[in-house]
Figure 1 (tube, helix red, strand yellow):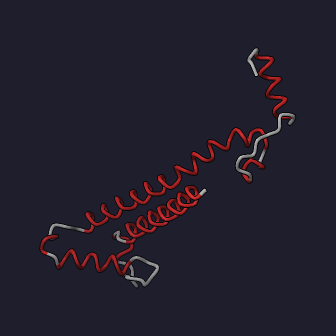
Figure 2: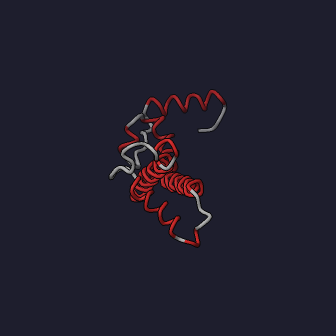
Figure 3: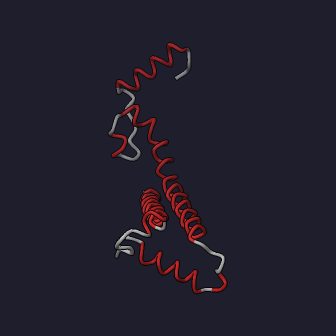
Length: 139
């Protein structure tokens, strides 16, 4: 259970980070950065993007860096955020895959009770046994 909770938190953090960085990449574009009122205050990423751009201009080691390079870095970090989200979704996907057979037999009750097993006299189990018998499989 704790692994699913940590995975859900990682997935949420990764998706929020990826979304914000993708938005920052868009805000660094030509259509937005020259509009009146730019830079806008928080929650817009404009202020730290402006500081980042000025840091490029003042640092001689980064003299060749342009806005295009910065946008590529933001896009790469956004993809890294999506990778973290996918890593966080892995335990949830495994849990759903393990729960699927129980859910087919018991309905939504399998979602609420770990370790729930259908009784041998349930109609779904009886139907499954009849289908196996008809197919000639052993029960």
